[in-house]
Length: 439
Ligand code: SF4
Image (cartoon, rainbow, N blue to C red; front, side):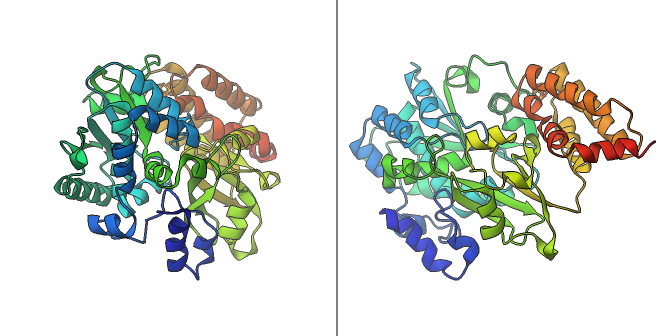
């Protein structure tokens, strides 16, 4: 596949659709273009498994790790940790048994990037995991996916069967010494199981609760074995990196955030759906050029990025570049790719309450700062939105949020206050008006 091929296919098919033409689809390059249930469509019309064949025939495992490092790709699940480093840590572990895990436990309200990637192009995920397995010396793969995604599960299972029949999964893949197979583990829909140590606990049949780190999964993962966990979007990018080259991949994006990112665009916006853009694209381009702007001539009030763990940005951040560093500097996060557009009619305090209600109900309860902090925050926000707020409630929310960020065990509790703290910072007047209602 040449560089042009990825985009040409896409542009020919969606030539009249402005919404699609302004995107750069790498992770979603085959979605909507191939039959996801037909391996031959992937093999012959999308150069499927060519990256794997090239890797097996021409590269040593350490060269594969180096190529991923050189590409600059960072984990698309939210934290943005350099993927190549994760691969290197797992590859360095001396153990005859290692695991590759695909984290498909997508749980952000309104987000469906992973589901669509699997439903539309399951073989890219399989191929990415195979390349990862070869690079780090693993022979077992697990896709951890929530049971609420039955079509994605069905298409993955069909992909496994077809790949086995073609000698692409199982023993001595493509006649090499490399053997690898994948199985599915269904999750019951707990948001916290998106955190990789909770996910590993769940795979092991334990309650899905995060473990303290270190040890990291690269050292002590599934059943105590070295384990490489990447999310769906990260795996979907891997074959493209080897088809087009690490230099090509790192030429897309910004200095520290390479490649593209998929967002689930939702809320008060004309064009909703999945949007894949190069890192460095501005929020304004997504909202107005791709999203088509706000319906009914309403004013934009806020852009919420990062799902229930993210922050609410005001209009003045519209020219912020979408990359890990810039979003963090603006007071939000990239997260896994949720993007909710909020117009002038929405109440930001109600919105903050909605997100804290979600994280409160999804908190696993293992540590006090998160368990009690989300509960107290929800109580405070409830009384504020019901006109029962008291003097000092806004400061109480700020203190609680600060404490939770510093002392919660995992990312869920550390980031749960973000919607509250960012709305207090950017829309304090709305909180004050709610509290004043009582007087
Ligand atoms: Fe559980 Fe929340 Fe503590 Fe994470 S921060 S371990 S979700 S209680």
